Structure formats: structure tokens, C-alpha cells
Amino acid sequence: MWQDKLNGVFELLGGLFIMLSCIRLHRDKKVRGVSFIHIAYFTLWGYWNIEYYSNLSQWVSLIGSLTVTLVNTVWLGMLLYYLRKEKRGKNDSIS
Image (cartoon, rainbow, N blue to C red; front, side):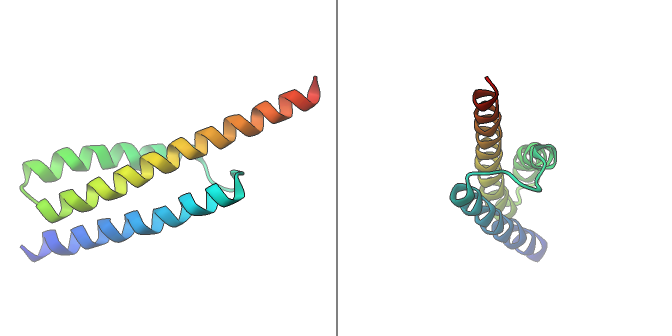
């Protein structure tokens, strides 16, 4: 089914593009201009898509969804890590 293949390609490309945000965050080690809320929402949606695509037997979309969800999960973890690290650094400088 061509729709599954096209959707899967979009999902795979999404994962690659999100990986660019992970690389940038790792390099900068600071969170600026990004809310964890939207990343958490789309990560949760990705986990739902894994269930959804597998039940529809849309295997290319499933692979794409696995990719984008994995990368979103990593990005969310990194984002929370650097936000906490920055908050600890501010608290250390205050005391």
C-alpha cells in the first residue's frame, strides 16, 4: 500500500530531523526556546502510533514510528537532563 510507504518515509525523515535537535542539544548543553511539553506530547503520540500501525499491519509506518519515537524519547531525556543540570547550577551559585 503506497500510503503506508509514504507515511513511513515521512516518519523516518522525522526521526532523522529530530536527531539534528539531539546533536545540537548535546553540543550546546543548554535548552533554549524549546518546551519539553510538546516533545513529551509527540513522544507519547509516537508510542500510540507504534500500537496503531502494528494493528493496521502498516509495517513501513511502524518502522518509521519506532524511529521517530526512539529519537523523541532520547531528545526528551536529554532535554530534561540539561534543564535539571542548569537548575542545579543556578541553585549552587545562589547558596
